[in-house]
Length: 559
Image 1 (cartoon, rainbow, N blue to C red):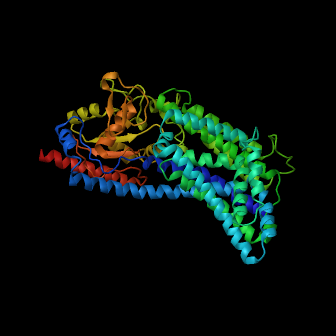
Image 2 (cartoon, rainbow, N blue to C red):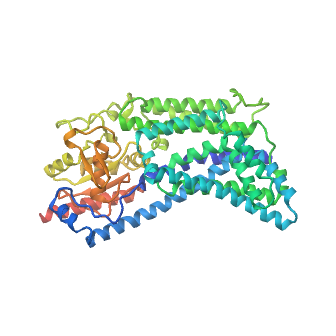
């Protein structure tokens, strides 16, 4: 019975793990790298720009400082929320790691190690606590090393750059295949043996090397878990450290408790084939998650190799195979014979089949709101039953708009993809601008479009009352040579559409986070300040749109 309860708890936690990853990555989109708040941005080439260049060393406009501080305050709150989600993901990964076959069987060895060393109850408790702290120091130290090697800017690039996403896709494929039992990712045996020998020494060093031995021996299981956690939410300088701290804290706490209270071991299920089943389960999750990163690169470069229906078809097959595996109908190399199907296995397999059935209508155009943030947009789908117009461009009564041949706005919104073109049209029809700073790899952008923009009231305002312009800040389409320029703000050559609009966002609004929604009048001044990012509360989003319309009407009346 205890084994069943533990398995139920574990698989419930695993079910929540993809959600935590999605939430963490969603937070990443909102709090990605921001421009230093001691810079004042003005329109490049203007008289203000020339004046600012000569004065910026001495002073900065008070109004600008105030606006930047306000924006920074908002981002600070969002960053704290993101770090809490990151920390939670690390804890979940640590709990998952404990139940893997590389770590779970080491519990008796650890307890035996401390039982032999303990001269008294107090010393035994102290040693166990030091052991737990050593685990934390080792993993957090690894997080610091990762940060120093990659740096904050590189971590942010991983989440937006196409080639980095391809790299992560391949890494996750390797991790997934490893968990399925094709091979093990291990460190050199000579290194493991040296650490193990040092763990026999007396004193604090022996305890520390015992913890190091655990980290090294379990690398074949913890490596993929940690790697997946890092690449799923890499956002800023603190991310690797926070992930490692959460991961090591949960793992260290469990081992420390068993070291202090050895009698608890009697309540643990015996090692067996169920441990490898957990590993295979995680392998399927790794393979499914890897597609998100390939999709991001595919959308940014417009390769067209992973359309929505192809993506969903692969997920459906993986979910069915997972369900069949859990019922014992598929057996991998490291699996033992399954005498019967336990209740936890049955329920998890049912969940896998239900998920597969839920995805099937998506092949024919169903919105699939529950996973809309992870799958490619509906515009990439070739065929939609009864909704032919959903993936095609709206009926046009005007000339073809810039970039509209490869960029799309959901829900058939007849909008723009270039700021200057949209501004000229807004002035012509006397309507306010709705700036949608978005990205192909932006999870929260897809979530907002599926959950908020789809509301009939919101959609009506966007279609009828605003001129929508979606500015993709991660698109890799190259700009014509005459439109390219060097950006001091981004410290790079602006040679793609994505960089062009990222520069615009940084210059005008002091941020490069997505999604970011700005309401502008035809005079290019904000109608509502500050702009908003992620807001899943539809009523609040409507209030934001209504306030923009009200302010625009006042301006029109005064003109």
